[in-house]
Length: 377
Image 1 (cartoon, rainbow, N blue to C red):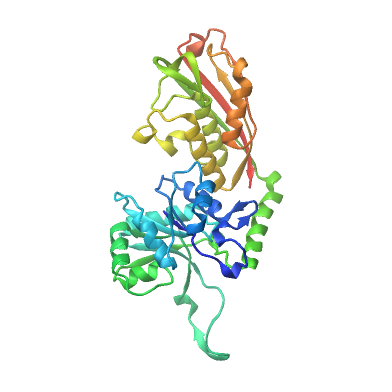
Image 2 (spheres, rainbow, N blue to C red; image 1 turned 135 degrees about the horizontal axis):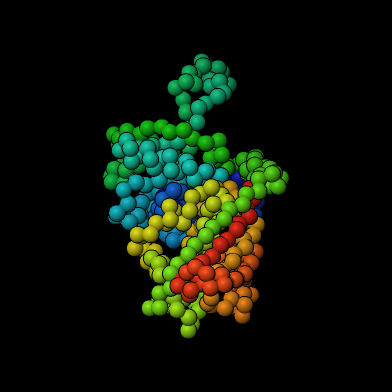
């Protein structure tokens, strides 16, 4: 996914480039990246930013795997810079305008599916509802049949090899990638767009986006959701113990494809459950080699981004650890501080034993149960 954030946005009347304008406390760029992180599958993320804003973009995206590159003199030149940064293994490329900061993650998924199923380019678009007139200056010429028209949005998706070739051979400057792609002789199909994917171009657009987000906050009490997560891992004496994102020296570790951090895994499952986003296994899998021995903080960061992209903010999470060891009390405050920083909301940690019953009571493993409270953001 290439997020184009190199435009100046003069029509917005801001002293900073448009992608770095704040919308309800967060930049348009950050909100656009949230949508990418909320996709059903992981994607390589390339952000194209103005040369004078590279460090700022990297700072805003700290904690993600985004590659930040310098944009060109035109939008087309900026997209070309993004394409040059793509991994050769990428087969589908999405190009998205950072100015469409409220685009739902589902729109990204819809475009990807269409490209894969058709083998062609794909763009999201909305029906045109206004009556369209053809004019010459201030003189009306005729009506235009709106049944033949669509209002294009982003992300626009394409087979990677065909898009690379189209950009290499482009001789004209086009207003969007679909126009360049069709000019190269390729087919582009249309999928349903979303009204939330409107482009923030003028101060009115920004005010409209603020109103949408503000309305969501106003209804937050009506959109409270609760999720529960449970995780259990067996003892593995050959491994170190990581629990709650912290290393526990002189304690035996837990089995698992990652570091076996039951506390972090249960916490993630509770957040995903609350947001209706499945569970840790369906989101991250157990066979991904990149997640081998990954620490719990990695999963929490991705999970919090998914929850935010789905339109929710975390209010608090409570986690209880069940097992004979380690003794949680001496490090409870440290655990809660570290986890709260990762979740960006209060996290409380408690612990209990199971009176010698079951695998936790016999010292064969550790379990954790988490409850998360989230609200519409």
